[in-house]
Image (cartoon, rainbow, N blue to C red; front, side, top):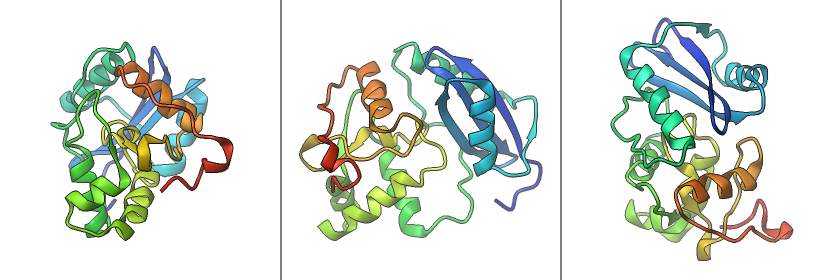
Length: 187
C-alpha cells in the first residue's frame, strides 16, 4: 500500500460496527461488523497499520452509506467504488474483478469463478485463498462465493460461516450451514 496518507473510519450499521480505510487512490480495507467500535478498530488496524482516523472523502462517505443500506437489507451495488488493493498477485486481481460482478442475491462457487477466468478446477483453491485474503470483504462480495454444491465453505470474517449465512440471508439467499467436518475444506 505505497500510497501516502492512509485514513480510516469506524461506523455503526444495523449489523454492528464496521471499519473502512482508504488512501488517495481508493478504498484499501473494509472490516465486516464487529460487536463493538473498539473491536472493529482493532481488527481494521491489524490489516491497515499506521492508518489514522480521518474525515471520509465524498466517495468513502458514499461507500459508508451503501454499507449501512446493505445491513438494512436494501439491495446495494458496490461495484462502482474505486479500490486500491496494493501489490496483489495478478491472478488474485482477476479473481477479485470477477467476484465483483456477482450481484446482489446471486452466488457462484470457487470452481465456477476459476472456470470463468479460464483456469482449470485446480484453480478453485486459489479462488478460495483469494476470498480468504480479501482486503475489502463485502465491497468485493466474497460472501457470495460458495464451495462446490452450494455449500457455505469457510469464511474468515468475525462470526465465520454463520456471518456469511446471515449476509446471504439479507440478500434473500438461503444456504445450509456446513457440517462441522467441512468447515475449512469445502472446495
